[in-house]
Image (cartoon, rainbow, N blue to C red):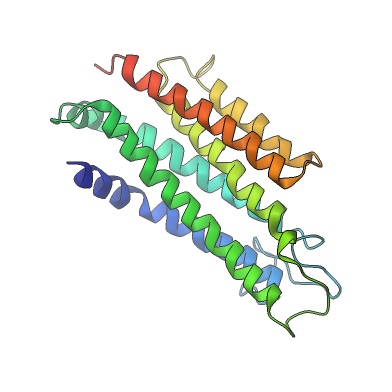
Length: 220
C-alpha cells in the first residue's frame, strides 16, 4: 500500500518537479554563461564574476526553489480535496499517518533532488579548470546549499497551510508566513552551518505540527 501511495504522489506531482528542475537549470546555465534563453531566469555571465559569491546565483536559485516548494506543498495538500478524493484516500486500509508521511517523503525527495542537481552542476563547472578566470573553493557553495535547505520550510509551511482546518483569511496561512520568515534569515550574514541548524530545527517543528494536524483533524 505504501508503494501505491508513493506512486500516486509521484505520478500526480512529477510534472511540477520537472518544471521546477528546468527553471533551476536555466538559472545554473545562465550563471555558467550558457543560458539558452538570456534574460529569462538566468542572466548572462559577466567577466570577473566569482561563482556563487558575486553572480547572484544563490538569490535567483532561491526564488525558483521557493516557487517549486510552494507549488509542491499546495498541490499535495489541496489536490486531494478536489472531487472529495481525500475521503477516498483516507478510507484505504492504511492509517492517515502513513498517507501523509508518504506525501512528505515523496514531496521532499522531489524537491531536494531537483534543487541539488543545478547546484551540483554549477559547482562542478566552477571547479573545472579553464572555465572561468576567478578563484573557487567548495566552501563558496555554502550559501546556495543553505538556500536549498531553507526552502524545505516553505514546502512544509505550504503543505501545513493546505491541510489546516481554518479560514484562509485568518490563521490558515500562518504556517506559511512563519516559514517565510524563517527563510528570510537567508538575508542575515549567518555562518552557513548555523543556518543549516536553524532550518533543521524549524523543519522539525513544522513536521511535528503536520503530524499533529493529520492525527487530530476530522477530514469528514
